[in-house]
Amino acid sequence: MIILEKRFNLSKFQLFLVIFILSISGFAQSISGTVLDGETNETVAFAAVQIGDSYGVITNNEGNFEIGTSRFSPNDSLVFTFLGYKRRAVAIKDFTDQKVFLVPDINTLSEIYLIDRNLDPMTIMGKVQENLSKNYPKQKEKFSVFQRTKENYKTENSDFVIKKADFVNKKIVKDVNSELALLIQYSKGKSSNIYYDTYFEIYKNEKDSLKLDIKKGTKLINLERNTSTDNLQNKAFATIGAKLEGSNSFKLRSGIIPISDSVDLKRTFNASKKADTLNIKDKNREFSNHLSDFGFGKNSDFSFITDYKKYNFTIDKVFSYNDELVYVLYFEPNKGSANYSGEVYISADTYAVLKAKYKLADGKRGNKINLKLLLGIKYEELSRDVLVIFNRNENSTYSLKYLKTNIEQYIYLNRSFTFIENNKDRKDRMKLKLDILSEGINKTENEILVIDSQPLSIADFNKINQKTKTSVQTIEKYDPTIWSPYTIISPNQAIKDFEN
View 1 (cartoon, rainbow, N blue to C red):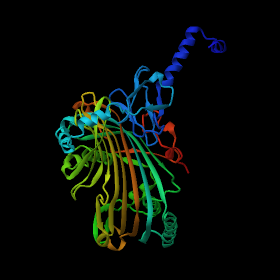
View 2: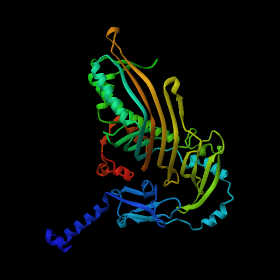
View 3: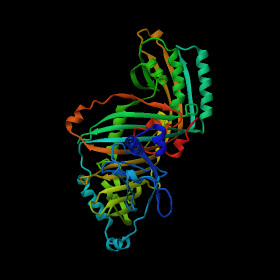
View 4: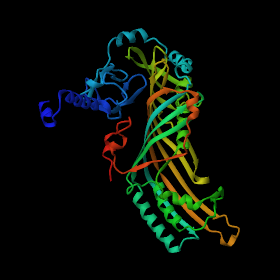
């Protein structure tokens, strides 16, 4: 302190201001750390880290978290919770140790179990279904959301051949086919990862109609080692598009099946050279599907809740969480049309689902289509693992806090595509014919974190004009400064180490 006074010739009042400003900056941006089990020192994945009732994050699969604190005062508390552990609260100003230890909550559990062990799990599930509309009401809300998607594609078999291109020199076609053959040979048996991070606001009315405002999007990819089929096609399309002249549209058919009467071929092929963009309508549709899948509706992914009589339930364990009793029920199919097995965590007070972990049961497969012989198309969902966590709101209703899905798919496509120019003079019509074969395993890991939620008026909903597209920043090495203004899911080590 004396050194500061002498070196910078500061008065005591000025020095006080400097120290005060520095102390504020210490917690003005964000806080990061790791949540661990207080007894085993093992990291705790997917623990809740909250400030207030509606703002917070979830620890990643390595127990790490980052949370923005600029909108809160130094006296506000960071609250750490996880099912089966005692709640822990630390004032923002007092958060100095990056390691947060949670203590298992084992008090009175034996007494609780003795009292409740005769409960019929089917009765509990009946209560859950009865209270769905009360616990998860449809209401107008604004959400701040962060999404991280990891795509991994492993090529098992691939081919891409330009069979005919009237508007391109035959030597160029031959050279392009040779280059593609080398790329295809290199890609076989190999896999590549791509990470997509997106931060956006969702505006939802009571009818689950959505409007999205994308704030930022990034694509983390190794461009040189990308072995996806899309990458191979883009390389070919870019070469073809550069040679295509004229402004006429094209008819497109696959085999004998007409697909489109008016394709702007030049624009389509040259689009592969443009910067990545995010189609907001597609993103809107994706989240509308999430609301349907995880909203306890008739076609919900929660068939073990909405159609629970198709499942066998047993009480696996009972514990307390935030001073309330929680039942953990294990379930598995008892009928052929039931698909899942897993655990569901239920509040004994409100009969709300707090958390669910489930997967396709042994011997079960997800969506599939097999038209391999007829149309050269086959798709099969090989596995599906889901973790979903709900947050209790101030008004004792519940809303989605975190969703993680891991889906593995087999994909097969073996089709020919023919483009024929829409030209009145049949003799001068340009033609392009492609043979495409793609066979491989696609793994998608998708995480959605609802960081904040607020009530929304219909007037505010109507004011929002959703854009059609937004740009995505392509990066080849993770840079934490890109996301410094935002609260996100803390990146795991694989993302931090990702580089060329």
